[in-house]
View 1: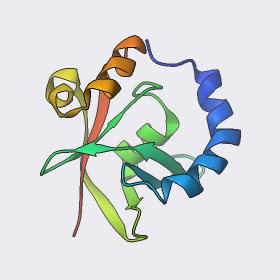
View 2 (view 1 turned 90 degrees about the vertical axis):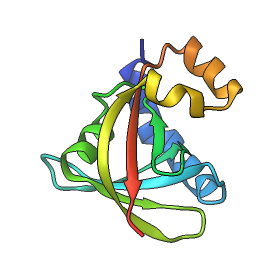
View 3 (view 1 turned 180 degrees about the vertical axis):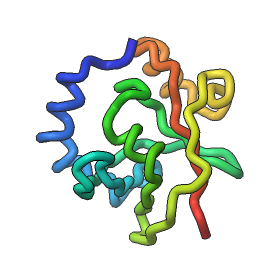
Length: 127
């Protein structure tokens, strides 16, 4: 069961504002820029990523129905890394544990198992 939506609202309203500057200094965090499906407003969401040679993965701790996930699935977006470079997000898809679990560090797997996270966003970045 993903985290409750009230936690997502709290993070979006308060926590993300403090996490974003820290995320820009971390190798494991990126800031995803996306556009609202209905409003057309631009949003920024800091997320923890892990990857393979081909794809980056994000654990969907709020589930696949979170607004930022639906925005990226519908309209793509860009990804800003630690070095300040931005790349377009392409080949976005929802995947399950079986496709991502082996790429996760043990400690992360432990916490995701406790949170019962089963969904992940998988994407590639353009060069």
